[in-house]
Image (tube, rainbow, N blue to C red; front, side, top):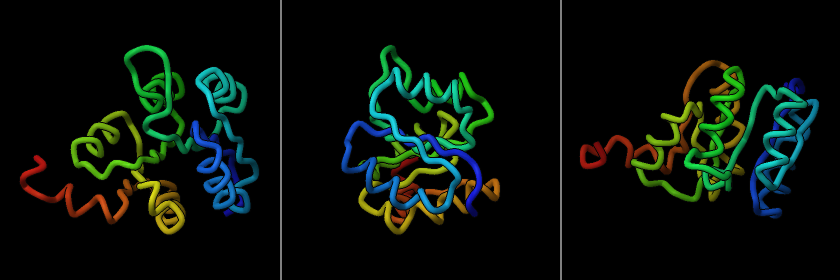
Length: 139
């Protein structure tokens, strides 16, 4: 699959390194950023095919980083990383335009399948979060 450019955004360096190691052999370029200015400047400069972003990534203003990326770069594919499996959080993030919602605790097993689904034009949600999404109480 070694094609395309990925922008990886997380404020936790250990998570950045771990996700980078999962992606680096699958893409031509994986660029890591850890702050808002770097995220927006790097996205503008690189015009990446894909962004893997922590849903809690800090940005100024009322919008989430994923929503900001979707607004400024409509063609980018977005994959959200999160510690939360709450159905409300999952639905909110998908409404921002993310094509995948990957739980950080299962990123080592879920991220590659998420990328495969996203590249095929489908939406992916980590299996550990899906049962709760299907729960009638979460609607």
